[in-house]
Length: 208
Image (cartoon, rainbow, N blue to C red; front, side, top):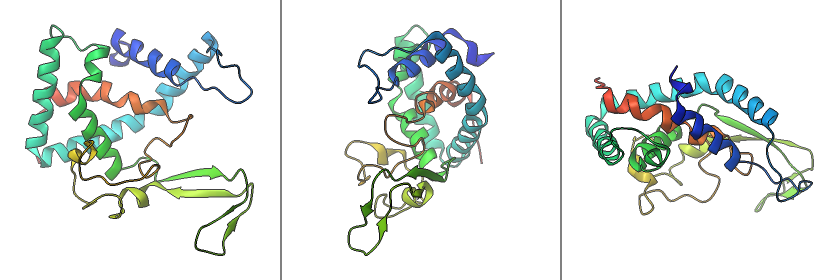
């Protein structure tokens, strides 16, 4: 099966180890155990199958509507494959910059988790109001509301991967792009989607 190919196994292990969390009660040199890796693998594939498939379906829909973007991705992938003897490597995946922007823009328009819950850790007074959020209060954050807010994204209903350029039209403060959550416990799926996307984008020919 595709997800058991060597490149994805290597990619997954790097995702897990690079996201190893230093909690306040852990030593800085804490390492992840084999049992923890197995548990992460199970959760990764169980929780990531439908979400990845849905995201890639939305991406295919947008690419079918914009063949110029589809061709730009194909040329980027072709260039990377030529560099690595027609094999997609871990390093090669990291060079698919435009393809990654397409995934990000897809998740901006179609976030799979429209709301995120967080627990307030200390009392917080909302600036410019009389509202105080007490410690222990569960706060619901609308990812969809942030992603479609013209204050942060110009023409939010337009599918535009280039808004994720360093000098693009994106004008967002931190925590306004939340398809995977945010912080040290961010979903490791943020690094996996591209590994399942490149082959479909390279060989596919989506049309409206």
